[in-house]
Image (cartoon, rainbow, N blue to C red; front, side, top):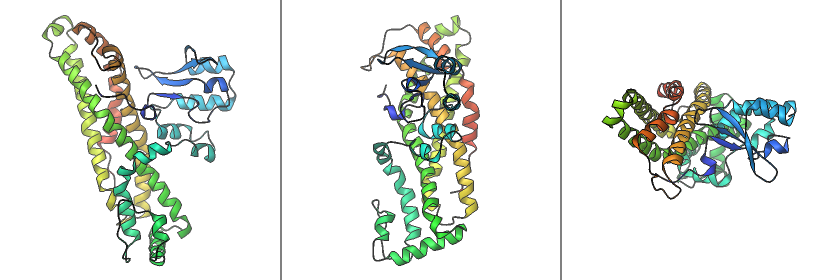
Amino acid sequence: MSKKPQPVDIFFEMPLDKWKVFDSKTLAQSKIVLLHDLKPVVDMFNAAGIGIGIRTAGEVITELGLSPQDRQRLVALMGARSLDVYSVRAALNDFLSDSELEQIKLPKKESERLHGYMNTYSRGLLSVILQGTDVKVTSRSSLSEILDGANRGAVLKNLVDIASRLRIEPTEIVAYIAKLSEIILAISYYQRVYDVLLADLRELTAEVKKLNEQVSLSVRFPGVKDETKEALAAARNTVLTLNGYFDQFHKVERFFDVITPEKFRGMRESVEIHYRAIGMIVCFWQIKISEWRRRFWDDRGRRRDSTWEQRYNFFKDTVYHNLYVIEENIELIKNAKLDL
């Protein structure tokens, strides 16, 4: 199987000192983990970093005597179905100040890795801003560089025109563009993580297919055929649905050609709903893949010894367990229409 995702890409666990969210130092030394059954727990550690067991939100609140603020934030986080940066922001939106929310973002290096995904969007934006000028848009062009050039007047005129079409003040255009950029960046981030996940999802699917083909198993375990078929269908629907969704984003370069306030508002509202669904789907498969890898592969990528019966029992208890919970999210993304 391929390499494990980097820590910043793991959606099913979150060290609670990743961002300054809690006043309790003891709580900040712990982490939230989504188990294979999608149950959220707090994995507790002592001051020396030694694990002392898992706790529910209620147990943590009672044991640590958390402040009302910490209680609210912990419960909100444990209600998230994914612990990626955008899902965390959404979960804590009502419990953090603007400055506190601002700290919950991708690390600089991670943002830089997304540059390739942003090129198409950036070229689409800049081509509209540069109408009537002799500046050529390249993959390295930036708005700040263009405003410093000889075409500054024409560029500012185009920005004023965009603001007029959007029925906002020209002074708001930068904040407006920044918000749209954040939306595009979020989907670009999910796509990058999904691209990493895809090879392992296909590998897991191949393992499930082998289980489905074992005649001896179907004799001893009558449910194996239907259960493995369900898992294969869920994996297939995930790939088809997310591939289709991300393909829509290939049209993002055209977004600014006919931009309107309604178009932007609709896109923003839609994508903010999609955040949670996509994050949950990716998180779900990360958990299943991680459990399968931990049980049947060692750290060097070598398969551990196991029987078909052991594989099936583990499949049923982990991969198949709660498989239905992603169906609603897959349907939401499958029916999503992005007005690009």
